[in-house]
Length: 123
Image (cartoon, rainbow, N blue to C red; front, side, top):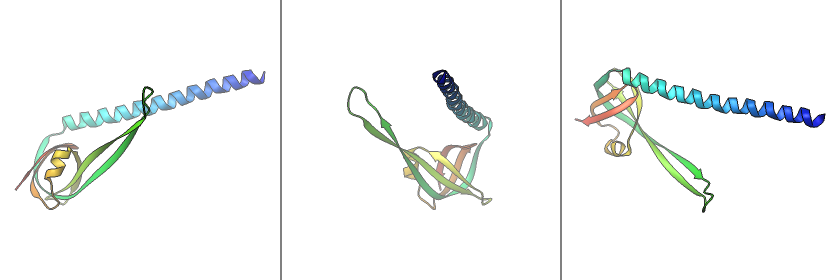
């Protein structure tokens, strides 16, 4: 009798955890799709802007390799903060090659669509 109750409790907990993980996956995917759609429906704007800061975010992935040694890989995400003439600031994610061309204090024309960085032409 005790085994039966324990087994049922395990089944319930397993199902709840599965729903929780699946729910987090669905919510994350929906947020990404919503942001992608919002960006696509936003106008492309080109405005005068100044680069006020730059930053990087470094992450790691640990890979368990069943056929050989485990290994870790890293990735870097690049961001720049721009200030437009109105005084508003926006932080946009950009490629490493674009990041390397920007210097704090640069002034020019920023082109973006929603939260999507499209380019910066220095003046």
